[in-house]
Image (tube, rainbow, N blue to C red; front, side):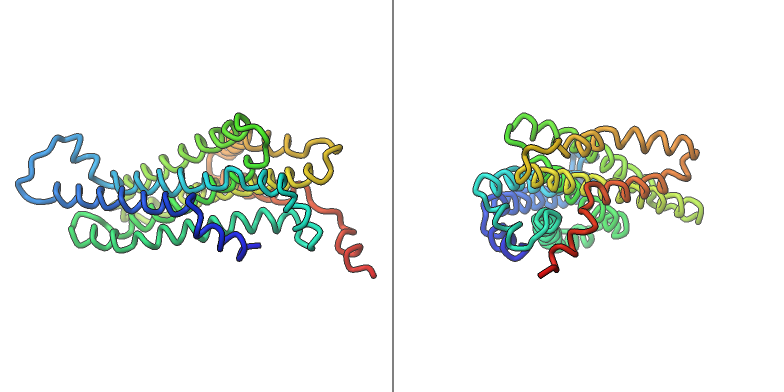
Length: 295
């Protein structure tokens, strides 16, 4: 499944065009930073602030990698069902989880490929001066998590027939993930120069929380995709997608309530428990493996 999707994804316009757009925007951002870093250059305070950290460089990366590239999955599951490929894959021995996981893993590979291709620009920015490696490494991890979380939401939304419902799910998940990414970047910017152990531990705690938050929405999207595949095969069953949509919309409120109840320090434990609950949602029957191995 991964090999099939990867071969198609590398040649698809949904990857090639955003990839070229990413490099064009990043090259423009690096050139702007270089021009403004030269002594004697006159520019407005607003323009200089835009070229600072994280600045236009990481903004361009977020927009393309975490915003545009995941949209190539917009028609992923609906295309499989309408072409009756999903039934063939399931009859061939693949599980629903393997199908959606394969599509998501391919998007993860394309995301990492795009980000790794930006390393030369990051080195150039470092040698220009004024760019610190550690904050940029944390931004690299944050944009990766945001892209993978958004890919899960788009994949889950791709099972709906109507474009309106797809955009509603993507918008709901996107707003939450953008808020988490923006908060993470503010935290990274404020953490520069921090030396106290307690402050570093606090930063590590909330940074890990942000990464797990993105992972939660990636899994919610994958489970929503699994639910769609179940409906394609058994349309007469009660829709299992409603539970995942409800989880997508109410998860922030549950996390907020858990954080308030534990004075903030148990928030990550509540998030881990929620991750586990979402992971085992719609679990296959225990006898499935025994039936499959029966003669």
